[in-house]
Length: 138
Image 1: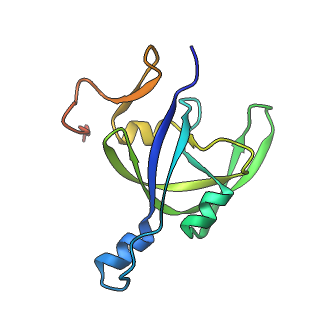
Image 2: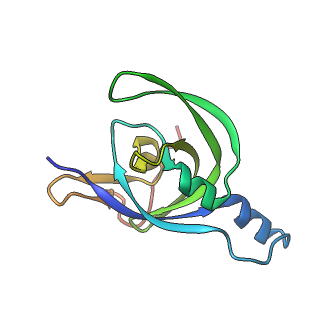
Image 3: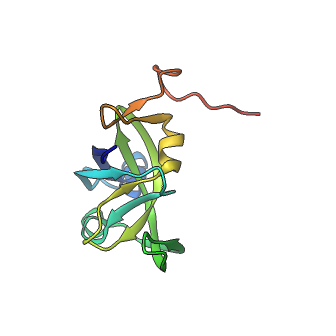
């Protein structure tokens, strides 16, 4: 199969909210980087150095099971706006060590209505909803 690595843009959601409320005039803190798409992971994970650069605050903790079958406690940080494959959503960030790759798990993929094209090794909009996410509400 092979790895699927995507370019992403991430912005501090708190900064975006402050701008909307006229409490901040500077642009939101943002980064452009790459992330490994891992459908076996659940959430959105960013390296500590990027969490610091974005100015995210710790708000909670979560337990994660690693590939080595170890249980790790990780910090959950304030939300960000994630842009991936032409779609945008707001997600909390799980902080991971800089030695690990940034990860996009299944929950962001589901919310953004994106699917993994394994042949082309990339993330694409769901072909059934090419104009944007469609949410079933029943």
